[in-house]
Length: 571
Image (tube, rainbow, N blue to C red):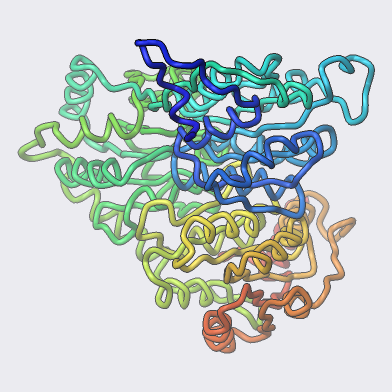
């Protein structure tokens, strides 16, 4: 009998439903909610779930460390807008995974992590690997809970899906007591969840239209998560109708086509100074979907706090975020998808006072990003990025973690499609490789690139073995400057010439790839990169391209030596 048949009782009176275990009900509920992938490091604390998954039709990705599994689930949620799912074991398994939960929370990503737990009768004895998951994950997650009774599994799983996607999306952590999973239940599954999205009211739109009619220098800034293809197209239509300059928030670059004549650039780390000046000079800032956090706000300098002098329209799916830092002139509680549809229907002005501003902003963006900058290194990352943007298909997915190498991605690569940049706004290292594995599982025929620094790569480089195991030909580009470069940069600013705890001695990363059964190549000159990339793509194997870069090449626009000299001169 199909499990779904158990959910429909015959009113004429048929035999009672056949009981199923709580573990089976959990998996059935995942299937009912459209889950196609789960990421896990197996644990004996949830063996009944693994057994139920074995014939569920859900693809299982077995990872090498729980942090990798959690980051894969987070990347899946970031790319699809639906909760990414991972299963980890109790105690150290859960704490290993906590980095992925933190990313999901700061990045507003829907995600559900199920954690094995000790038997209910052993709790509060500090049993084997016991943790209080509500206490541990309560501050990190949108909701942290423990399912106490098997009969409530459908209820809790349904609530997890609704909670992860409603308002400001985020992670849910649900603990699964080992003995609870073996209980039988006969009740029905919950109906599949439908995300609840707030929409703007008529008065909101009238007020916004009035503010636009009074503006002389408006600016539209896009951010946040759970954007759809329809919203992507509709926000472009709105920008065109009103001839607005459009910026994207930190690591939300794919929300607007960078070659569109209205695109002004990325308001993030290392932003174009002309763009920052343009946003500061705006008399109306429309912030759609994002929070304008520390990075996008240029360390909270774009707007006055708590009362911006610039007229601020803050549109956000989570009402608790509006007014949290900035008191807006107009607050609209709406999801990006609903708001974009409404904005696309607004009647455009006949002769906006800001005509020509968008073209000027786009010209500034092109001048900033068109050509690589000179570098004190035989490998110029700017030229590498330009080659990639000229060579890769538009739907190629770029994943990365944290490190100064990412400044070249933000400045020189161009994301022409939605959800093609999967990277943590939380700035978490070790993210690129697991995210790339997840994206290749999701898009097996697509091109997936993982960028990582040398320190960054080795925080989750073991997931390269996962790519090999599943035959996923991701390409990892490791930027090796033998340093924790970002920290070294700050060190030279604050303590010039006093290097401590930032140097690294690295392995042969190309050899690392070959040992695992992948393809490896080393690049020591810029002109050798195209051939290495072509060979990696032709190999059909998971690949690592090892770029050897001078630590002096620390930013696209300034060398490490120049940073040190500037710091010394200011003393």
